[in-house]
Length: 456
Image (cartoon, rainbow, N blue to C red; front, side, top):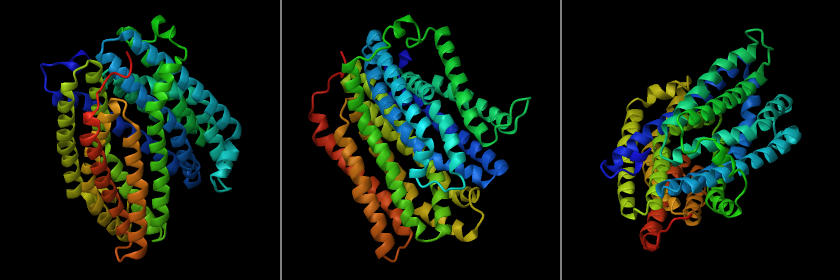
């Protein structure tokens, strides 16, 4: 971790070392979710898969809060780590752990008690509402521990350590895959939980992995191990909490509004029939993997920039931005070229219908290249966020989605000859506008500001 701020190695090389485990972590998480869906869908049936799927938007909404707070804590930890202020790092950890636990407890009580009512408000079909509410209730009750685990992996990345979170996620994914059939079908003398075995497997794998992570951090004497010096900070420092919320709430709001925009977009897609809806699902699956490098590079840039700000090495920020942009176009470009070359084969993993495959292929051709623009904007935004500038980058992101992507998708799909292809034009249009706005603010306003540490 010490070499993150090293002068002897180029920033791009340090960032690449940090980036590989981060990209693998994101990919591994998607693979774990995919395997879980396959097991439930193939062996328990469509209704069981629907019961789980009905809960996903609600779970994403709950997790978006902790992701926002985690983003704020990683910036503060990165700055404290760069300043070599171990006491302040532990204060951030203590406040974040206490706040996330209390938030998880509040959501667990609300969700656990009112799960059925909440699923009903979401319009869950009557034939799956009981199963979906029971599944939701299990995961809601586990949120306090899940939130603590998510928070701790974020802390690791804030210190420049992306390997430990990757290893812990690998352990969690393997445990989840092993426990799935055991708990679903009642192997090894255990009760047969059926659909709910998937929820219990997710909870058990997270709890076991979190315990192992804490033991491992203690063994290697990690600066953020859960020792007496961290435990004495397990209280809310209201000044730090206010700073965490100022940094984190805009990220959470942005995530929520992004998810709502996807709901709006799918209503446009549904007008063109079930083939179009299936094509939308397949294209989104491919796009989720294509944008992983961009998202991961954005996280890396934010952490490296926050560490250099903490170390008062502001002259290195331009190196961080340059390295991020180069990696975005090389790594992202390589992946996009591969998908373009083998797009038909890749889409056939998800689609068997020839007509649906043709729709999906045409949509992929329209939007795929623009994820390089998305990544470029992410890097500019991440640099500004690392200094505590979060409001305007969030406003620009929301504007590009709700004032460009959604209206363009609506107008072109409803009032032009492009049909469904017009919906996908909304994505590159939004990415281009976002990059222009983010870069303009970065160039003409942010660069002229005096950058200082958020914590001292």
